[in-house]
Image 1 (tube, one colour):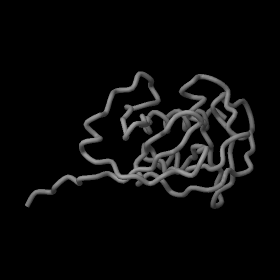
Image 2 (cartoon, one colour; image 1 turned 30 degrees about the horizontal axis):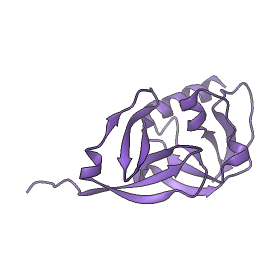
Image 3 (cartoon, one colour; image 1 turned 90 degrees about the horizontal axis):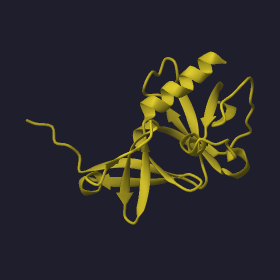
Length: 155
């Protein structure tokens, strides 16, 4: 008996400031209202800060600022954070958060939509995909998690 591939993939569509981010639903732990954050040390311009979640300090990374190579303005505008589990090296990075500017949407991506993948031109994105009339960015979670881990170790 062969294992058939699923017809759809469950994903979360995260509204960024002026972009949409598409991540696998299996990486999402929880979505919460934007928390009070703290900062310490010399942090990069895309690093929003840390917050206490379930007895651990999680980093919030502004992927908009990372992609646009600018300073973050997230804490003034974001309404939620999407907490993701670390998949690249969970021993080093158990979880982290990305800001959202509205509640994320649970969606299913079918095989026809997956065929519209286009390679991205940045180290932080894997690809972009057309969903209806909108374009969503698919982050390179391995690269993003490596970046977060490297900054955390340097602090």
